[in-house]
Length: 367
Image (cartoon, rainbow, N blue to C red; front, side, top):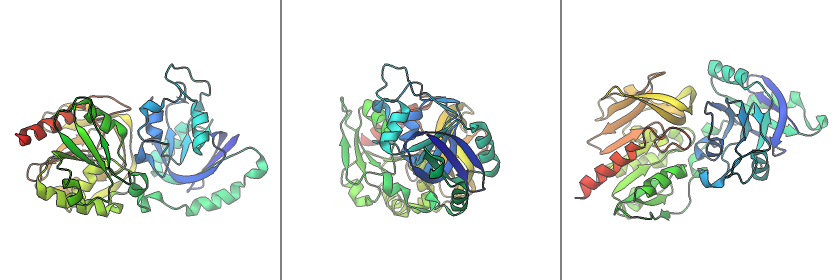
């Protein structure tokens, strides 16, 4: 197959197609990770986005469903420099091309991903259209270029409700430590559940529309506010729930979108980053110790640090590159929050100890 990518500024990239024969649109973003493409593709935080991998070769170790972050691909389209159609790994069940084709996701390869990434860094993420086709008569570049000027922005939609669970789901650990955590699912990555299960915690995964009373009815010892896609201000129903949950003083932990919603619940503000943080090598500085951690990140919005001053919130981490807010905590409201993914998958496990700290806080309050 052949393929074409058209950006809203009129830029055109022509390459070869893989995955499904289809047409799609979305926000074109880039990820700098060298590995972890199955995890990224199934991460609900990528809903509504056409994902470009900056690493030149993708697909070489195939697809292993056991490391998925959700039950299906969440991206709208996929971009890579080169695709390996003959993977070599003992865990591989499918090739990347086969899997995306079966999932209805189109991809384009053979383009200059460095040029595309530089353009997105300079101008900011852009909307785009991606189409794969077999015959020249199947494509109309002029028509695509015209349509690309009026693509629906996925960030104007409520993407959280589209990717989160609809009913409560319980996850029992092999060795229960007596702690039950209610996870407000905004598009949760499965490795958050896996890591907390591995530490002995029972997890109750709840829809994002759950009321505070519904969450508390499970008598949780702790509450996790998960990651998720899109503009945090489109998930106002969860902001209301989180604001009410704070009154119970139950220990809370917010991750990525969860941090942004905690800020909004305290009348803070969030804003859209120019091209976001997506990759496995983002440095964050612990403001208490000065130590630098390398983290896995995937977000296009951030908390306005100035907007949370004087609201009983302390800024705990900042990004070493652009000084954006990466962590915050509040003793009064009994929460800690982080803009990156301490559950990694993919990425370094440098900050998985934050889950241990959360569990220790819960245990102290249980006594």
